[in-house]
Length: 264
Ligand SMILES: Cc1cc2nc3c(=O)[nH]c(=O)nc-3n(C[C@H](O)[C@H](O)[C@H](O)COP(=O)(O)OP(=O)(O)OC[C@H]3O[C@@H](n4cnc5c(N)ncnc54)[C@H](O)[C@@H]3O)c2cc1C
Image (cartoon, rainbow, N blue to C red; front, side, top):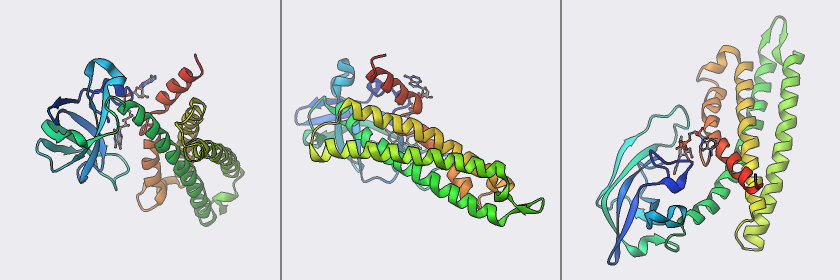
């Protein structure tokens, strides 16, 4: 999906798939594509009707061995280093029309539906990661002493952790409630998600994103200098969790969509 000049504003993508007989010919560029350097296939969003904005996008399943496909570079990231992130180019890349996924010009709608799953999974994993990092910090604080007693015995830290755990519990309950709504609509009623559910999913991502940053930053500080050293899991968690407020739709974009749903 993402391109150098269009990330949050997906409808602004420039990659074009032009119909040519029984094929599509695709020209354009993508960036930030997770696992893009080693994928055998990619799901590609391109404009099939460039004049129609969001209503002119379609999805394609593209084998990466197709002529005209190149990986131009692997981007260097500050975190999440166990997956690669690539820039991709498509130059007169010809694929059979049957490689199109779903209806022509319905890609944006599919994308928005798929985003909801991604955002909900990310919210659940960020809540779990938050609990894990606090548990890890508390264990560290029992072992590490300063001024004659374990640092976990300092009320200033106890209150911080209790406060964060209280908010994590609330966030977990909210994510679970939203998962129930999602399952009911998607798997029981088997329909598209309602705007009410989309609103809650966006709100989960807003809430959990800020909370995850606060949790990991507090845990890092609690480790003192060791929090800044790679030997401890908090260093990696602090870097990795930062993506949560950006990937799959930024916190600001979530707020933009919620405001729209609320009719502001
Ligand atoms: C490690 C990593 C992996 C990724 N993996 C993928 C992938 O596999 N596939 C893929 O397609 N994309 C992927 N992305 C891209 C990611 O989805 C985008 O970076 C993200 O959606 C933001 O788009 P952008 O970077 O173009 O920022 P922009 O859209 O340029 O946003 C810049 C700033 O403007 C703000 N902004 C934008 N719109 C509004 C608004 N309406 N109101 C207020 N503020 C606004 C944003 O919040 C942000 O702070 C990945 C990104 C990273 C960093």
